[in-house]
Image (cartoon, rainbow, N blue to C red; front, top):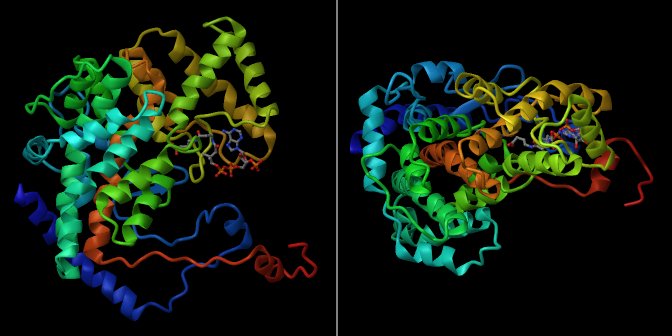
Amino acid sequence: MEYIKNKFYQKASKCINEYQKLKNEHGDKVIANVTIGQVMTGMKGVPSLITDTSKLDPNTGIRFRGYTIPELREKLPRLNPEGEPLPEGLFYLMLIGEIPDRDDVLNISKDWATRAYVPQHVFDVIDSLPLTSRPMTQFSAAILSMATDSIFQKAYRAGVHKKHYWDTTYEDVMNLIARLPRIAAYIYRRNFHNNHHIEPDPRLDWAGNLAHMMGHDTEEVKRLLRLYMVVHADHEGGNVSAHTTHLVGSALSNPYYAYAAGMLGLAGPLHGYANQEVINWIFDMIQELDNDNPSEEDIVAYTKKTLSEGRVIPGYGHAVLRQTDPRFTAQQEFAKKYIKDDKLINIVNTLHRVVPPILEATGKVKNPWPNVDAYSGSLLYYYGVKEHSFYTVLFGVSRALGVLASLVMDRLYGLPIERPSSFPLKWYHEKAGEKDGAC
Ligand code: CMX
């Protein structure tokens, strides 16, 4: 599918001149001051990255190339009028900056199907790990092991000119994304279905094939995974998985290394692992109360108890957002449309009512509202994907779309190696006008 690559190059290459002009002519322009508070809270709000694929607004949430999630659900092509848009279309939008037509999207599906072959040694690496190792450990090890196939790495070794780095990065990125459903499904079937694997069906779309290979070959699960893959795909550049992929990629590590590193960040409980923590936490509550239909009072008491133990309420809060996450809302609407009554989903909806005021009352939580992870697990569980230790792998498959589209652009712009400055605590102490520090 050379035309997608050519279209990307035609559109994106216009931006190279803008990037160069900014770098060469406006390098001295001051755009922000950094406060000690920002350094002490993880560099929040400091503009320091270039990411074109999506932008996060604290109040209205994520926009992919300017489009909100409800707009995407309306405008991106779908297989049938009742279904959800295909994630292939979102990838096209993030990469090229235009809403694709149906043929563009079907072409990406076909392209990925032709690239989806996973070498045997990747399965051998997965099989060499004990079943006790987390699915995210198996997933990131599998991705790393695929670096043997990196076209970028071979081209770099052969001395290719830096202006062509984006080209082989694009090839690696397309191969990598194409292979992810097979790898994820392999881990799922290995861990939870006695190693009974299901071959890919090249006629299916990317997310549909994932559902098929996981053994959930129904239209409902395919529809859910298409939505899931769209809402989790990208969240601008500063979140841990996106930033790590960019950072490691900035050393010109191959795309397999960069994305594997991003996945290790996603595996943390304050980021993507929160989608498992939400379900773990709800099941712990059910077990402790010995009741799978807890009252609102019981849920309030359990939430307060968790806080008093110095733990976080998973699925709530966000580093940037200051409203309910539209990714949460999209999943809630999906549940309202397709699910009549379900105990777990009822608990999730009750939590939505009771947790924000409790978090607000702490006086320190900046965003008491639910994030994407508060809903996703309950939907998967409802449709039979009950193995929650696997959920972060699904998040990771989706996140590849955004972080790897960005990596291609990083290489096209020729973004430099990232290297912010660090100082001892004493230096900040002195900057604050304090004198006799203990450190
Ligand atoms: N439960 C309890 N306390 C919370 C909280 C929550 N859900 N969210 C924030 N806080 C606390 C912080 O731990 C911090 O406490 P200390 O001052 O004692 O350190 C304080 O409130 C201020 O934090 P903040 O500025 O509001 O939030 P941060 O930017 O530091 O952290 C996040 C953001 C997401 C890590 C945090 O809200 C959290 O831990 N949430 C629960 C885990 C979660 O759902 N993560 C998924 C996020 C989405 C994703 O990436 O997938």
